[in-house]
Each structure stands twice: as C-alpha cells, then as structure tokens.
Image (cartoon, rainbow, N blue to C red; front, side, top):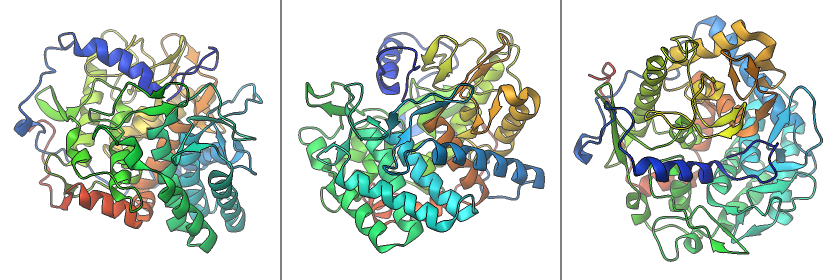
Length: 457
C-alpha cells in the first residue's frame, strides 16, 4: 500500500486504486471478453488448483532459498527494540529511512514464526523479537480505538506522513499478532496478543454502516472510501466477526459486493484491481475446501490467477517478454514511481514490467506455473532481479530497468505463500486461533468437497 519514496507524500494503494476504479467503473470494460454475469453464475467450475502436493526437490530447494532471503528482510529491516519494520529497503545503496509500516510489521511477525520453525534464527531470539514487538504495540505505538496508524517511525512509533488510522493495515498487523500468539505458546506473548486484538473496536468502525471505511484521521474523521467490493479486505471483516470484545454484526459479511467477471469463458469474482486483492486474506485465512453462500474463494483466486496469466499471454504481441515462463503484474514500483496496475481489464500504464510477487503471492493457487515464473526470474536475470532479500519489487526486461528496492508487503506475500504451498504452516497455525475460526463460522462458511475441473470448463 505504498508509493515511490522519491515523492514527497505517500498515499496508499487503496487511494490510487480508488482513483483508477472510479474511472474504470464509468467506462465500458476494456476487453470484450470481460463481461458481467448474473450473481448465480459467478464462478466457473473450479480449476484443478493444487496445494501441499509433492514438489520436485529442486522446487523445494528453490522455495527454501526464496523464504530464507525474504525472511532476512523482516529480520534486518526492523528496529529490534520496537519490532516495527521498514516499509521498504534499497538493496543497492542502503538508506537510513525510519519509515515503518504496520502492514510490513504484520508480515514480519508471521515471518518470525516461519523463521523460528525453519531455524533461520535461534528460538530465543525469535521469541524475544516477538515479545519486544508486542510490548511496543500494546504500550507505546499510537492507536485510536485499537486501530494503528499506517506509517510509523521505526524507532519511536511516531505517526508519519499525516497517515490515516488504517483499517486494512491494522488487519494485516493483527493477522501477524495472532499467528505469533498461536505459534509461540508463551504466556506473555499470549496475554499481549489477546489484549492488542481485544482492544480493537470494530463497532466504532461500523457504527453507522455495515460497509467499513478505509480509515480515520484526527484532522478529518472517517475517510470517504469504503470497503464495498471484493478485495483483500475479507480478512478485516472476518477478524471483526471473530472478535468477542467488539464484534461486527453478521450482516457486514453480506453487505459488500461480489462483482462477477468473465475472461476467455472463465467466470470468477473480481475487482477493477491488481492481483494482490486475491492473495492477501488467503495468506492467513485458510479458505480451502470451504465456502459461504456466495463462493469458494480459494478456487476463485486460483481462477483469477489463471485468468491473469492468460491476460498477460494476450499482451505478448505488445510486450514480447510476457510468456508462459514470465508473467505477472500487480501493484508495484515502476520506472515512473509506484503504480497500481494489472488486469483484466487492463489497469494502469502497462509497459512490459514484471512484478515477481504477482506469481509469488499466487503460489498455492497455480503452484507449477508460478514456480516456473519465479525460477525463470532468478535463473535468467540473476542479481539484477535477485538480492539478499529475494526478488526486487519489479523490473522491465524490455527496457533494462531493474528496481533497487524491495517492499515489505510484496516480499511478505511471497514468503508466506511459499511456506503455505510447501507445508500449510501459516494456514494451520493461524486457523487454530478461535478468533479466526469464529469469524469464518459467523460469516457462514461450511466445509465441502469441490469437484476439480479444467480451466474454463
């Protein structure tokens, strides 16, 4: 939810996306194959998505390299005393920026659990870092009704950039907090995590509407934009539904829209938004083999990933770098700064740039196809696209532009989904939290056995 550091004012992904979405909603869809469907025909028969199946040994070794490098960002780009993690890092000329992100910190807490599980750092050091983080979140980091400011100084926790109290970024942070509580099984960690979660006043956020606002500032009050369409916000509604202290009403889950799309005769729920909207909630919430009254969201994300791959293939005549082995566009840095781009329909000034976390964040949905992309990037483009923190945020093979930064949430979604496709560790750990299970139950999720079928069948 980030903008290039070269500009003087940071705005969120969501602000950029709303600007794009307002325009897109008022125009005919850009591709004649992208059309609306009746709500009862929202999704095609599910794709044959594979998760936690056997991987070739070379894939296991490669994913281990991806995870360990990604983890290194979260371990090294934090203030160990506060636990707040930087938004991004320049891997060519390291800077001394103090700009921290609470969303990056949420991915980082999850990453520490992965690092402890895999032995990347000693157990006591991992546990100590989590304790420091939770103590700071509970005692010192400024908040309003339990919700945290989007941007914070990594050293002091001071609000930066006049940022908003962010509902979605707080939700990402809470997912990390709950993952750490369940993984470490430590009395003080448990007490602090529970206190941080229970302090969040979801009823304040939904006081006059079942459609939650993006945030609040002390200067202007609630932001005008609402979480009214399918997107990464599912985690936020589910966390609110799972709260005991300040729960959301059950009707909030059915209040937001599930817009139907179709591409190449494949139907799915989507948004005028990049691919990350299909990934973030599913980094923690396990939607496999369960559905609510509307959809199987795991299969829907698999379908959306397949559609995005086909969309990129269809751009090959314009951008010759896109191929079966190299595809993926989602919100990222670009040669012109931070851009919210993707498709279908085509959104943003697509120019042939490849964004590694588009494939990385979709690893559980299309394992072999996304692994192929990531291996191609590392093996073919080498240290231009691969760093000590994993993949650069974006690069363009056609122009020779390679980003110098990695971004916390983009590195984070790749790290978490790599672990989920290998072992399901984050899913299995997070879903043991009663708040997570209660949220899905109150939203009406029930287990079922999807019938696998070919794409577009």
